Image 1 (cartoon, rainbow, N blue to C red):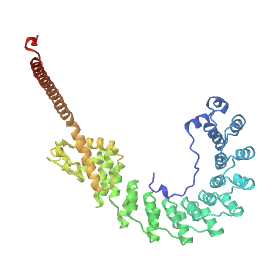
Image 2 (image 1 turned 180 degrees about the horizontal axis):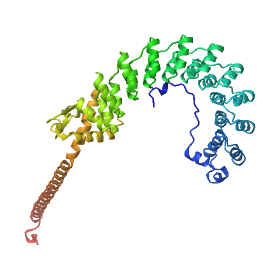
Image 3 (image 1 turned 60 degrees about the vertical axis):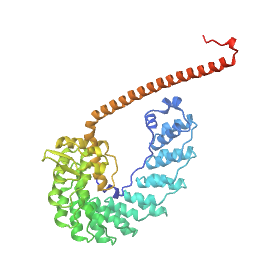
Image 4 (image 1 turned 45 degrees about the vertical axis):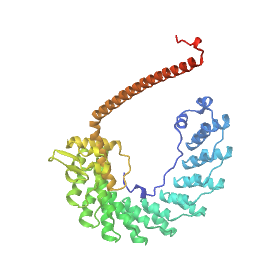
Length: 457
């Protein structure tokens, strides 16, 4: 998908998101589930809305007769949006919930002229600017003309901008000729983004709003080379580094080469970073061989987290972002990991073969690929931390065993000390008892008459 999809002004249905239970119940007649699942405050209400939105009038009528649950304005709104005039009329005649301005707005943007006319004649909610904007953006000229003649809400710049962005030249021309509607630079920007060269040419010849650098940036990012060439030759806005960055990311090699040969903006490290993350080894190689921007540690992290082994190997061979080769080309290790990790125990990590190192890196980064990284320093710290952790994991079993043995020895020693302490305390208590007893006996004998000396048995 293009990175410039967000620039489009396509106005589409925005249906209610029904729960799985509602969708399942919607596959059969309500008489088959209602007795078991009757729930006036939730399921039944949503089922009435579901039946209305999907034009299932018999089911809706059954629920109306057999279930006292409320409905909502979403029923008529959804029925109008999806073109179910019969349901709209029945709900209007038999229910009191009514609708909102979304009914006419959505009916207009989806080209439901008959429903727009009926709502205008029979309801009072009306519509908003979205009605004409949506009709224009989606090329519903008859709806747009009717709204212009019968409603007074009007439209905004988004009407012609949207029509141009979506390539509806006839709609743009009619609005220009019959209403003298205005547009903005977004009209040509959007048309260029989506490759509508005929619209771009017409706007250039007949309008004065022009475009911005977003026009060539978007056209390049979406692979529309002819539009890029035309903008370069005829317009003066030019582009930014985003043009080549996104052309690389989206795999438009012909656009990348043309920009490289004909424009001076170049690209940024984002190009190779994101190309690596999408596994585009050919793009990474081309950038390395033809451009000087290079990449950041994010390139290796992006490729490794997605499992692109060949890309990681190529980056490791040509870029050394915090990774240092030791002992020739067959072994590499983390460069001073203690600086980033803050651990004295990782300074003498063993050297490992490159393939094993890369697989460890991929495994570690796949687990932590959702982490957000703010800058290059954080990226370097992260890659060192992850690789260090994977290497240390292989040595941890022996360390754990030694630690467990030490803990056991300490426990035994502690128990022995406790036992000795108890025995000493017992001896002291026995000795004290004996001394106290002897002292008491001596006092008793002193108090007794000599003839009645107490004799200890």
